[in-house]
Image (cartoon, rainbow, N blue to C red; front, side, top):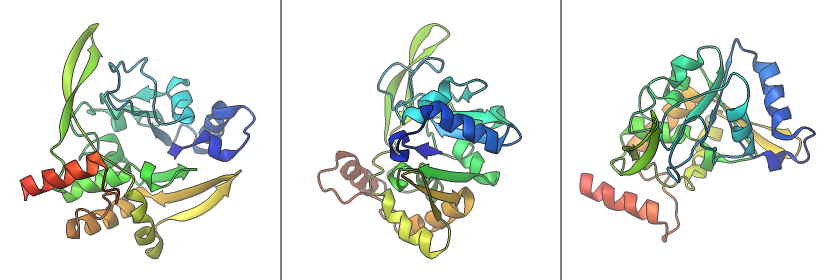
Length: 232
């Protein structure tokens, strides 16, 4: 789930109330996963580093029974059945590659819910980029991680700009792969993960730049174009 608390309007109990409601609906027989990305802005401490993906995800990170993966820039938190399985092995360089939490969610009939945000926040599109092996994936950076009381440097993939991801909406809508609802003031997009990733992977294999943003001054997307030329 990717979310914006403010998009809902006034919520009595705030982010805590949203999470409590989710847990009651899903129950511990299911699983809730949220991005708790830090983007490598600070030294990553899996127990203390705050989520930079919204107030709901940060409250979720701190709530009872929630576990966190160990990716230094794109960690994921989970609560519920088989949380350890979904989060295991996320120390790899590429946060959305095969075997990572969101890819496992696809393979296990999971769903994506966007609350008050568009596909620019839909990290499943990064999974599709990995599966399509787009030619601009080899960008990475060194980030600092706290491990066993020591600060070490590890390499993490730079996933790049996602502002062009809203271009996915017409493809998903025309194939009846996304449903839209409203909760409070927020627009909700709800979709089954695997069919969405399969469709977008198919599109990216034909045009790897389909979801690159159109801002000619975007450093990340221009860098992606340069990387692609180098790898073609």
